[in-house]
Amino acid sequence: MQKNDVVTVKIEDIGNSGEGIGKIDGYTLFIKDSIIGDVVEARIMKAKKNYAYAKLLNVVTPSEYRVEHPACQVVRSCGGCQIQEMEYGRQLQFKEDKVRENLMRIGGIPREILSGAMEPVVGMEEPFAYRNKAQFPIGTDRNGRIVAGFYAGRTHSIIPNRKCALGVEVNERILGIVIDFMEEYRISSYDEGEHRGLVRHVLIRYGFQTKEIMVCLVINGEELPHGEVLAQRLSAIEGMTSVTFSVNRERTNVIMGDVIRPLWGQMYITDRIGDVKYQISPLSFYQVNPVQTENLYGIALEYAGLTGTETVWDLYCGIGTISLFLAGKAKQVYGVEVVPQAVRDARNNAGMNGIRNVEFFEGKAEKVLPEFGRRYEEEHGGERYHADVVVVDPPRKGCDEGLLGTIVEMGAERIVYVSCDPATLARDLKFLRGEGYEVERVRAVDQFPHTVHVETVCLLSKKAQ
Ligand code: SAH
Image 1 (tube, protein in one colour):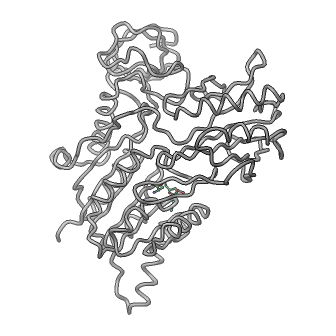
Image 2 (tube, helix red, strand yellow):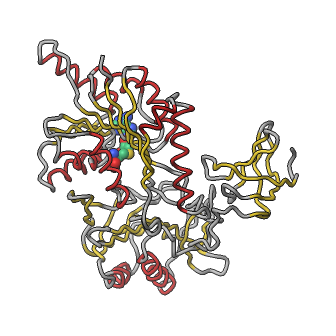
Image 3 (cartoon, helix red, strand yellow):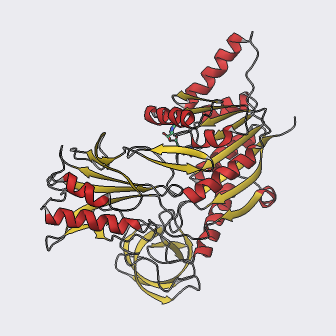
């Protein structure tokens, strides 16, 4: 196979970045914008020994799962969604298969165990308009008009689109007000290449439970000229609670600056997950799909099997969302998180909700947990610390192996593993199975419909000796 060859191939699978995967005589082709079941014609762009990237030229026979009229106009050029053109039901099936396949291949978990443990993937009833946060880059098009949209995949060219199908409806109205304001007062958009111009991004957050709205303009400057006019116009939107700007004068891909300044209203909005309230500022981390987050935490809670007498460790706890969700059913919860601001938010959230049986430690889980164990032993005449239930929710790279070793040493009865990457989940489960734990229950949750990402919750129990 060589560059510029044109091939016809049937798509059998979806790769890690969302490309369709087809095979010709064992040679693998990755073809963006094709979906499982399509027969496509594609041109080879980059050929390697065993695989090639090819550009979709034409869908010869559309898959039975192909969506005829995608919800979004820019579905192919925008980098946000990868599999929106595949029917939602088939997306869910794909995600469940991906989890199963990783657990078998990388985790070495026997099929019999998985078929007993795996529960049906949790999808959304309404898989659109689910995101409570959007960050629109602002630019200027060839005709000198201000545009807002999203980056094309892998680049920073802006695909104009004020109506993202994954975001809430009010985004469009807010962007309209911001753009009209910029054009009227001749306020420039930021130019990344030249590191010139003012408005870089518009961050919008929406509280699904409280209906409170936050707008934060990220600017390459210390002041927003005529900011009071913009604030007054935005404040006319029902639910508007917070209008701020963030100063980011760096040449960087990081969107937000460290400083947030008020324009109108409060500096934060409030939202709820289950019964727990959260204060969310422009810089706070907060789960972006609140509907599925509640489902995800509900499963974690069920798997934790709490009766009210347990001590629970919530490792990689972020702003303490899982800790606070579990606290009502546990005797004591300890959260561990490495980012200091997140720990401050977690403590603040606990206080605001009057939850007293939680304590948060700042530091790396792989340091904090063993240190806690050592201190306990010293204070209890050498008696080893026993953990009842441990929840982990690590970033994509998964858990530190030393940490898993400590959890095993502490004899945790149950481990609830919340994962955003089935490959590292599988690797860590392999380790834990080797140390006397068995996979009891596994469930994929679709936190990010139309993207390739999948979240998984897994329950492991210590096997009887
Ligand atoms: N459980 C939280 C957040 C999970 S995201 C929620 O559901 O909202 C993973 C978190 O792990 C991030 O907040 C990240 O800052 C934190 N983290 C990354 N490495 C860590 C480590 N070694 N020890 C503790 N926390 C870590």
